[in-house]
Image (cartoon, rainbow, N blue to C red):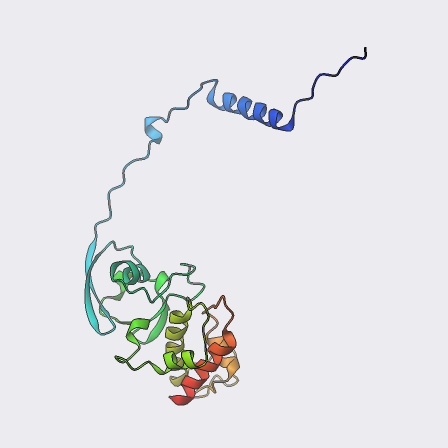
Length: 217
């Protein structure tokens, strides 16, 4: 009878044996690894909260916050104003855009404690009672949204952007940076709104809505 070769070890068995040997070498043959007292995690003292008052949509809001709380989290989690959305949380998508003293900012990148005394406007504060802001009405008319997640930030950003145009701020595509007011072409709108992303790619309708609102105003 021919000799039968012994079964060859599987790749899994080799890896398991290697891992076991490495563990024994690192731990010096001990079966358990005990954390030394010097490496034990120490209990950090909590950061004291701070009382502050924010003026949001014309109303004073008294809050007690960890000073590390972002303006976005203060709005959403402490005041229940969930219109401003948290998208990337890194200032890259624009979903959290709000207006502070008329200028658009990313609320996820700004601390709430930085804005005492400022006039903060969110998507909830743009309409005048039951009368929609012209940009809100234009977005509905032009169907400038699909899932709607980016829409509050798009609209707030567009409000701030149109104020920038009226103030004579040029953009990277402005033909004449010395002009008192830029001509709001589609190219200008796209450039000025480039910080607000739409996953649904409703950009043509967004541009049309902003153009309509600009012409109306």
